[in-house]
Length: 199
Image 1 (spheres, rainbow, N blue to C red):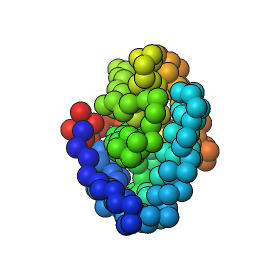
Image 2 (tube, one colour; image 1 turned 45 degrees about the horizontal axis):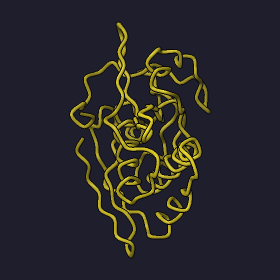
Image 3 (cartoon, rainbow, N blue to C red; image 1 turned 90 degrees about the vertical axis):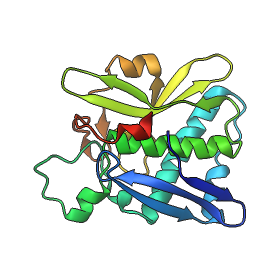
């Protein structure tokens, strides 16, 4: 997956965030050293389970920080209905599962590059498909057990901790009934999107 970011202790972190559905728009975000430090401070786990919980909160923090400098602060759980009367800015700030998976995977790559992940390595985004829908989410592998886990940020509003489940459970589609913090999560994307960002 293509990733655009740089990290310098003195200047903070710069990265691109996807939004507008299917990664149709990318905005470069620069967070300060202090803001990045607030993410780094969340890590320091003694075991894999604890680290996964820390990753959840770090992903939420990264979404919140990215929302300070981009339209994604407007993102609500799931996808906005096609009939939504939201403003153009609301629609531009909304994320589908492609946007969510790309962003979360980029955040995970930042954590890995910074040496914050002791018990996990970042994988390509997880993918599942039904007859009418397809869905993507960020994906990690526990080291050295090889167990895989999905962090699915699509189900909740911007800045909220994602759903965390094993890959096996995520792929059995049992999460379709999960509700977002602001109501029904809606349907996953069935559009083509820019899936090159996820491969």
